Amino acid sequence: MLVVTLASSSSGNCALVSGGGQNILIDAGISYRRIVSSLNALGVGPRDISAVLITHTHSDHIGGLPTLTKYISPRIFCGRGTDVTLERSIRPGGEITRLDCGADLYIGELKITPFKTSHDSPGSVGYSITSERGRFVYCTDLGIVTPEVEAAALGADAAVIESNHDLRMLQTGPYPQFLKRRIASDVGHLSNDTSAAFAGRLADSGTRRLVLAHLSKENNTPEAAYSACTDSLRKRGAERDVTVRVAPHDCIGEALIL
Ligand SMILES: [Zn+2]
Ligand SMILES: [Zn+2]
Image (cartoon, protein in one colour):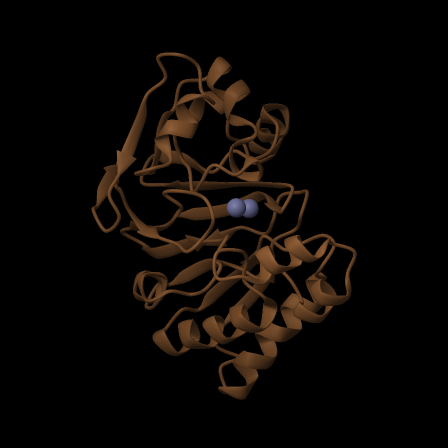
């Protein structure tokens, strides 16, 4: 199984998961044109995409979906509660399947298990994806690491987790107060420090590859996210056991290979 972020930030999110004979997107929050050019760079054609897993309906996760569904017809999966908004975003007649958290879905040989996340978008989920080579978890837009997220993520071989903002940069940055409060709230986004503590617990559970994702362009830097995470791992003596990468905002990231 191969997992690559095509874009990852508050202005657009999309990842490719290839394995078990399938090519699947997680979210489609960048333009269809960018999705196609990114896929082409990875040797994948848009018509090779069999499914799109949607985490939630904020525009940085579904902004490319209306155009995408005009050109190709992948099956679209989402959490229960997300489908009403999604129906307005796809080509009429396009197929959307609602998923129950904790229930397994098979796409080819990939087992997909959605889990609930705490975020201010109804039906917001993360995904656990298992192939015969291992298990990978994708969870961004986490206001907090809830027991459900923790239970779903611990023990995964690899994980893409949110590391959205440096709290000091957020507090002293240019955003209006209401937005700062929303981002730092339990239904907003995960700070570097909270993400780093989560990364430490993942390392303890056996996770060996981490990608820090959905970094804010205004309230974070790749260096701040990386050093918060690696400091946390170092404190646990796990820095040599776990590979940490930061997903770039606007281009293809390094592939996670399981
Ligand atoms: Zn987002
Ligand atoms: Zn969001």
